[in-house]
Amino acid sequence: MISKEEKDYINKIITKLFRPEASKIVLALLDKGEATEEWIAKETGMKLSLIRKLLYELYEKGYVTFKRERDEKTGWYIYYAKFNIDKFNELLLERIKIIYDKKLKIRLNYEKNNIFFICPRHKRRYRIEEALANNYLCPEEGCGQLLIHFDNSAYIKKLTEKIQLIENILKKIEKI
Ligand SMILES: [Zn+2]
Image (cartoon, rainbow, N blue to C red):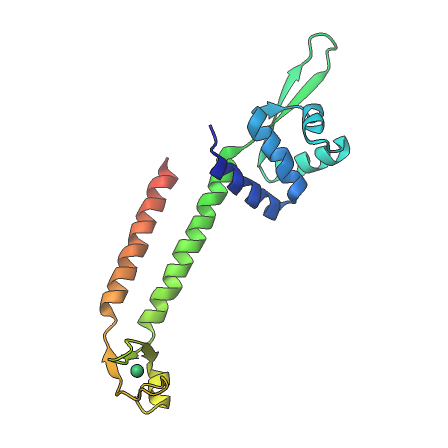
């Protein structure tokens, strides 16, 4: 069963990747499980031609799969569309990877590649370039305290550990 939060998230992402109408289809499919184009048309009030077009776009990217069944009365094939939640989770994982991995790595590089000074009164950090430009005096208005070197090795250690932790989690998820 998919929670409301998950639905909201799927709605947001599908709207962003495709358009709001595609998300309407996906939400209808999530409620029903699998459905024909005709059912979706009735449910959403959208035109069949638009539904067909959007279903095809979703199918092309792997977010929708189709199941074929023969109608015993008419002998015609009926196609049932289904939202591919696995594909969506894959995408989600990629996004998490990019957000956490990149953000933390950028932060880590920033810490590694800079020398910092700190104002003992404000506890505000300055990069050495800023400190130098202010003659190692705190530029904060009315302060002027002598800046002291800030050892960021504890920060670097923490960030490295966080990155390691996330990498391990991602490795585990990918194995499932
Ligand atoms: Zn200061």
